[in-house]
Image 1 (cartoon, one colour):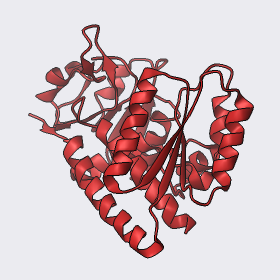
Image 2 (tube, one colour):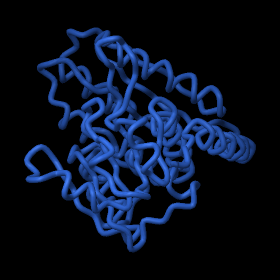
Image 3 (cartoon, helix red, strand yellow):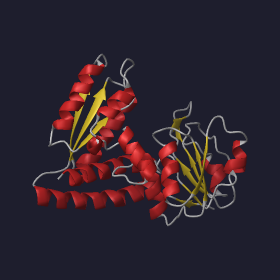
Image 4 (cartoon, helix red, strand yellow):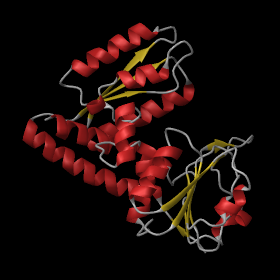
Length: 282
């Protein structure tokens, strides 16, 4: 029977640590670290994410504002706003909420953010530094996964680690971080031949493909650690992960639930990145 890796509890522990560190920062520098979030349009999911980020900043004492732009905003206007935030010494972190409306080049926008304020770590400079292991910031979801493993006493060193998904936001940086911790990493994706043959080898399996219930018990080996990054909604509206949780629970040694696993860690890592950005800029 699996140990449940409780992302809510671990996230709360880390946020308490961040709150204390923010208090020290404020006492030393006379102001709080500050995050600016830019959202273009009225995508409902994005609105929820942004509200959660605001709430989390407030909880630990980080200052924040949300700059809301209409959905018909053009690329030039958005880039001009980012340039202003880059030059504002009072802004330590900049986050542009994705997705952006059609007609705006997401890559161009992300790469316009000053790398020292790129707290999502999506820009090319920060991505390159992650691959070399010489980084300041990590993308929030992979960073959250690594914290979950670390604080659960699970080491990747010498283990067979399989990542399902090769996105720039999760899959690729996840593989790099597991390699930095001396894991032997396989990245699987939609073109992988005989996917179950790879997943059954995994000591640590990270699924980030966005397919509800995709990973079943017959795809994992006895005693595997299962990290479910997927967030999916069933036709009935229930939130579920990529992993058949009930089916895999008896076979795994440790598993993250959805909700309450990786999800709470993502915004927590954003707070950590914002504090680090402020400390480095000072």
